[in-house]
Image (cartoon, rainbow, N blue to C red):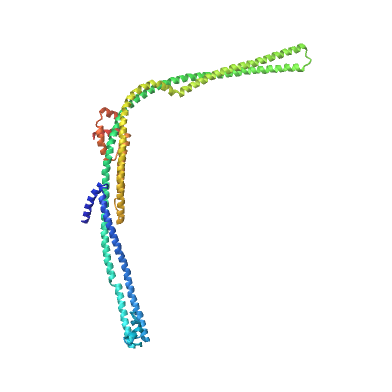
Length: 520
């Protein structure tokens, strides 16, 4: 009945706490804290009882020691009394030995004698035996007291039995309270998790509304993209055909230039061969002339017996040979010049042809682009009409994207605020459970909330990414239901031609998903 009252009070307090910014489990948490405080008080009381229980053993031992001391004192006193009775330390008036008279410590033996006008005299044998028998009775009685104290119930064992009962009852009550705390902690976690599921679904629905509209805007853009794609395909085909024509023309020019290069290289080879042959003959003639000239000069120098006519003939020969040598050298020089001119001309023509081929090769794209200007202008005009329409749609898409991001930021802010509350309660729960000395559920309630909240937002991201990639999304059942409801309201307005265009831009699975959304 007490537990029912606590739970009812907790429910009322919980509603108030939620209203002022607590989780749905705050009321239950307050009950846990209250029970933990009770357990702490019980633990303190149990510790006090346990201390009394332990202290009773010490007190019991002290009393036993007192009993044993009394026994030992009687035995020692008996021995002293016997010695005193035999030694004359015995009062003649009261018939007691010195030890017995001084046992209380109130007076000395000599003081006692003066007070009673007695004298110290030896005791008789009969009196000694009587006094020893009296001591034996006292010692036996004290030994019986000790035996009963050790073997039978005494005040200390009765106290410990009572303390044991109190501690057992208190332990049972505390165990019951701990069990209640464990049950309440599970209830606390269930409430927090259920609240997390409901409030995060409410939060994420606002994002899904905008996301569905954004995806519809993307679909409308995709319809325009289909038309742009078809126009692009037509342009690509026309460009390809024109490029092929230009490339074929360039290839023909390069072929003709290569043929010219081959012909010139053949002529250059023939020219060099002819040059080597002619130059060889001229050098052979030159060597022969120089040999003859050397012979003539030698004859003129060493033969002093020559006649004037012979000398004149030799001079004329010398001059003729020198003239012929000079002519030969001039002819070689002239031939070299002609050869070099012809060779350079052929090499220049080859270089020019190679440069032209290189220019045609590296500038093929430039030549093609120049030829494509008119064609591109025509397609550009057509494309601009479609692009203007697409730009208008993109502007709307950007606005929706920004709005979705803002809503996602607001979602994270709400999550952070709720996380702070959940963390504060988690700390309270940990402290309460630690105080109560029990293992509780709900320690991970904050983590469960964040996991649920993060999964919701992850589902939003998955839907966003998969829609952009024309893929089908799986899982996220609760989010999917919300999303589809909002998306249907937009997609149902597409015309058949729009759906056909959208189908062309989507994979089969994506198209089937769209149809499923429309028909479900």
